[in-house]
Length: 485
Image (cartoon, rainbow, N blue to C red; front, side, top):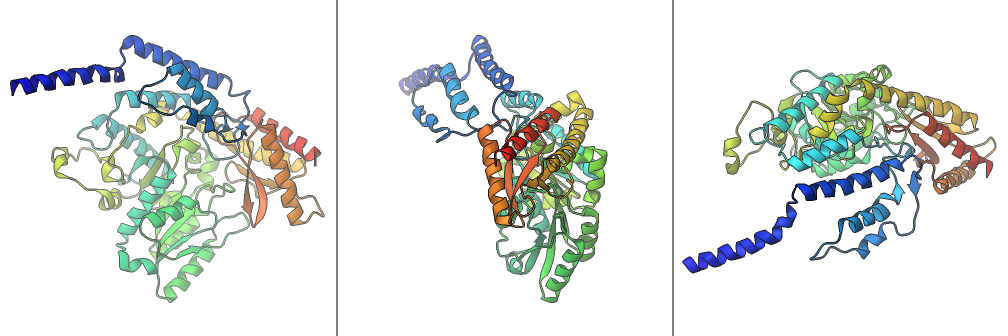
């Protein structure tokens, strides 16, 4: 037996020596940090002068030339592959000239917070084992709940994004209405054609694929009509169906439209429906005076989703769900196991009890550090700037001859090239041609959608690095493409 133990000890020491490379010493850490910081500084230093969109054949295909093997490669070579194959091609969400989609740009302060969170590797799911991270998350979530206008009974969680946050809200709503499998085919969901597909996915993942989904009619500004909602609910009740969930938009992806939340809350309350607001894009505009006016009524919702990686400028991977009543979340998600018997602590609500996640990274730090260090004021200023940039762009792009969509509720503007006498089909072709030219130019990154079946361009001013000079460049590029038609 002694000989067997010595053999085991000898083999363990061999494995320990081989595994020690996983834990670099101080000198190695300094070298690793220096190389990584140099890479990040090259990226940030070139951001303003780099194309906002780089179109290449077979993007990132070169990654396949560097397979993962038994032995590693030099860090400088690995970072070279990263820069050439990952950071260069495609769109650059970190760029202020990324005006195509709803990206916040990724604040440097939050990136540093992510570094600290990963190095410390604190668990943030249960208060007993991670009291600091849990208190920090609850503090940040409480700040969001206060911003929405919820009472002290509210709670929530910071998840990976709007998809999981919306799923959390849908599951809480389902269980609050005590829906069971036999009920699903008659349990009606109300939304619009502008509702993000993440909500449809959430309904399906929640097991409600059989649930009827009604697309409520829109007004001329692509917002849900409260009168149409009331009518369709009444018709469904007459059919013996069970209305239970109304999903309103506070900043649609296509056009940035905000539904009339206060009037919709009236209908939902009268009909006994759970009222959920998808404010993934628009929620943090509540920090501004104009935003509070546009989003009036969100405080009456039962749940809401806000994405800090959009309108709070954090890197990808942060979506906050908040619910008016913590009990609706714990009823849906609180579970335990024998191995967690030491963790029964009610000093703080644990994120694992109010969301689907048990494995929980320390996400709160990326949101807490910028807010606590910089204060709210610069975020408010940046968001107000984006509102004004959208209004400025709409005015100026109309002067170029573009047909513009409704005045923006937030910071998305829709527009298309449709000169008088042009058929809708020809206008689609010309608008597509303009977008293709903008992509080839690369100075700004714009995108398209379809509204009422027509090919339409979008400009989304949201990143913290997007400023007046960026919008002027976008207008210049569009003018150049029009001149080439």
